[in-house]
Image (cartoon, rainbow, N blue to C red; front, side, top):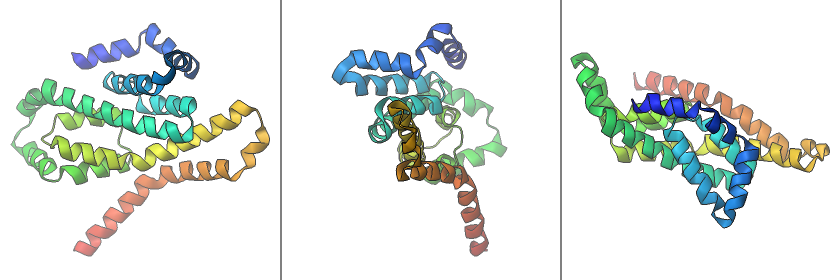
Length: 214
């Protein structure tokens, strides 16, 4: 019921109207010195309401720039991930446990034993952010393992994405298109392209490790 209500709320015209860089930027400008805290709260609540994390991250980078955007987005993503996990744990865990048979219980137990490694791996291969937040709450993974795995797992991807969006937005805002040929733009573009290959690199390393273990 919570999921259905959250999705319905996000799809409402009022919410869609707010989810633009211009609208949100104006609201944060009105908040003055409280703008970072307001954005972090908006992001964290948005994650719990199934607003796509990529959209929220792009808005943060566009509004606060490459560096502060990264800091605020990472903090907000952690709070949102923690909130969504706890919602899944306390509103859906018992229901999920009743559906898990003996054949699936061993996987649930394995996730509990290897929670940190499981969460870290799924974050590094860019498993969908919001579904994973709620989904992990339905498993037996420890909250501490989930939090550490998430914090480390999203660190590189968040920096790469915010750096790329923030850099392009900076050039766009100045209107000096010659700056598109600067090292900073090429570096951010290179990082962004590299991030697309991270899942394949992780999978190849995992296969190589498994082969050595045999």
